[in-house]
Length: 287
View (tube, rainbow, N blue to C red):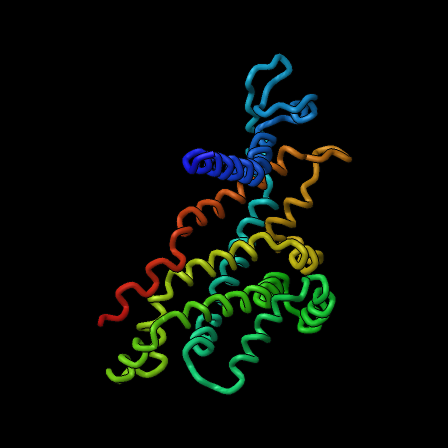
């Protein structure tokens, strides 16, 4: 077998693997989208169809599921709750995390390495192990559900944000800080006027990941909103969807709600996916 044949075979195998991974990752989303456009009778058809069809086999899309979820006040309020909680969590995590990352990445002080390891260790605890302690603390403080969720989500998003941003600050050339010091800039001025704009791609990336984590969180939201239903976030609201009659599972509405709340996250990911590391320090230092 010559080199050309080996190259063709390796390329073919590579593209087959890519297609398999692509189908494996996107098929659940496609099936949810397909199910969201089916009525209850269509969902019960056997065998299941890959496109919504009626009993005669004709293509038939059912839009009532989407109309029903937006007529559901609980679902609409849950979108606002999730936006508020996830948005504030992301802003606070970026605000505190950027300061901490600057100190850990660029300043010299004793115990810096130990601090980094402690921050990393905080992300290793499973949620369920700290749930009871956090709930007892929140109850003692008498906080309402929304502030409770924001504070709780910061326990997991803040260490992640700090750890990732620290690596970005470390990559910035030290000559930038030295030049700023020569020009008379204080460490704080160097941070927010020079270094922070250079880490904008990192802020976008970590902020987006923190937002997604807070947007999709279920366990803490279910616990803290159990006594305050008006503060329920999207995952809890979808999980507690109920049918119009007893023992009915509104599967079509659940899928429509899942698609509706996934689209904004997908759009954000598509917009900011390229703003990561490339060009982070390009042109920052001139020789």
